[in-house]
Length: 313
Image (cartoon, rainbow, N blue to C red; front, side, top):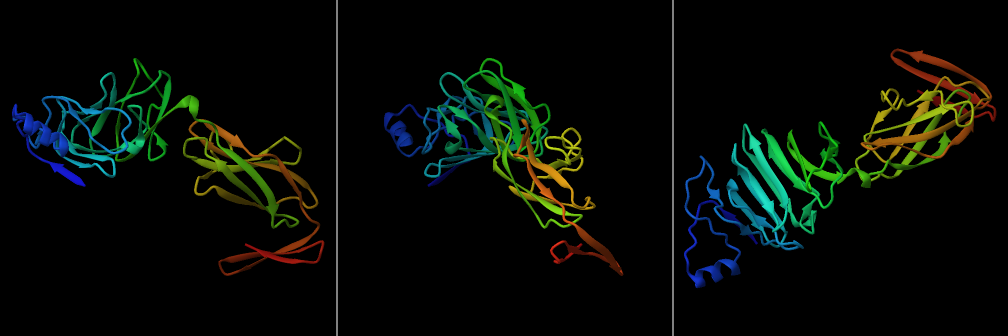
């Protein structure tokens, strides 16, 4: 069941009223002056009652927003229009869970109990054109990668201090926070080359694990000696690499030498760094090819050493 709260309500000192409020998870907001548009203003901590929470989480005193929507069954809290210049804070008895403070506009925030563990959160959604300052509680100090829709935000990773990570960012989407030590480079497999002719081949790779963070680029590197790669994806500049699109990826090589052994491996990176597949090899075939151009279309006709005719773009 979803409940919405829009106006300040005064909690009377009446035990029966208090029991009624607790039973139906209806939160009370004493009547106080609020910023324009801030209908929900907490003058005292209010317990957040969501299915799946494994720690007592409060909506902290001083938090302001236009309205709240609480779906107890789904375990979600939606905070609509956190006030410009104000803040909204979730906390336990001993630490902050997550605080948002927008500047320049309001911010809408969605929290799910599925993303909370022992009073700490690793994911949340924000919709805002404002620059939002965040404070996130963490279970241990270290360096933390913060990403928006799987892309690290400016300045990330951030060092925590006193069990908190602080940063600011502008952008709508899904935020995630991950301790850097728990993120690894991607794992992947280099697959056998296919469509091998006398001058071309298709290289293939498959990502088996993203390492705990979204993969950003994929590619291959190759050469004519084992372990020595003179061509392909450049790690520092990303030249010759491709933006990630799928775990299974490929690249066609052309203008290769005939009857030559080529060694290659697949590669992929996430914010932590590059991961590599094992080395594979192939041998180009003997034969000849001609290139035919008709209008704006060009095709290469190859006859390999087995007599097969291969037509490629």
